[in-house]
Image (cartoon, rainbow, N blue to C red; front, top):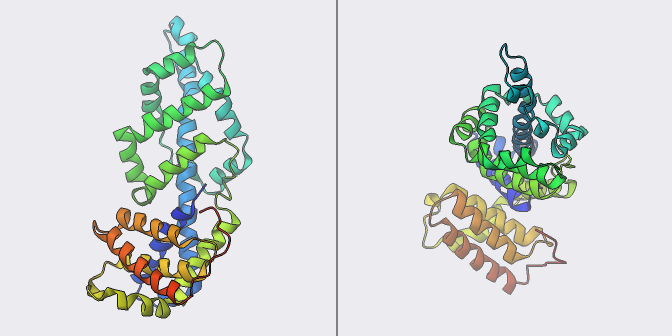
Length: 310
């Protein structure tokens, strides 16, 4: 589920973290790899918590129904509260997913779930037309079960200012990775609940992440030899640190990653620069990488093989 673009961002963030260390960690490959792995694991933690929150809101229907039935003075509505969303097929498939249960248990992710927010969100859900139509249905299908859970995520969590503030305040790293998690959740609802929550990152992509990180560290002098001449109109010391990291990463992909097309590399780093650096960074990264690539092509130093999916 995590794309190469997501990996590039995590590698960039790792290099940025290393650049701020004054204890020699910049040249420590083991420390660098450990930091990257921690960042990738944290993405998986946040994604799993997002899924967990979504199904816990649905499961609160059962809690709500029991509380209403146990009231001293009950109404017919209290005794017949609909709690089918708590048992819907999408929720049940997640609860049968051993990797999900293992991830939640081993990393103690339940600690991030605040029942007061579950209660508020469920009571908000009960008032929506989507939920009213859902419980009015005489027959629920896997498609309608998934759709109502997606509605919970999109409308009652991500578009809920109070819930989103809770995520920012109480989920470490949400401000950095929130956009990535939202994208992963979109892909999650497009697919199925049979996700491996232990190995969200494939072995091939994890290897790519490590190889890119270590290449940037190992080949720094060579990369700077190629980059520095292209900064004639720029003071190297004043170039944004993120821009310089992206240039180094881009040059490494040109030279040492033969299955990644050069055009893909440039486009990816332009987009990342626009999102994570200054307003001018996209144009700057584009110009420098394009000039470097032209020289490398002339010198016959670009050797690309069969294109792989980015």
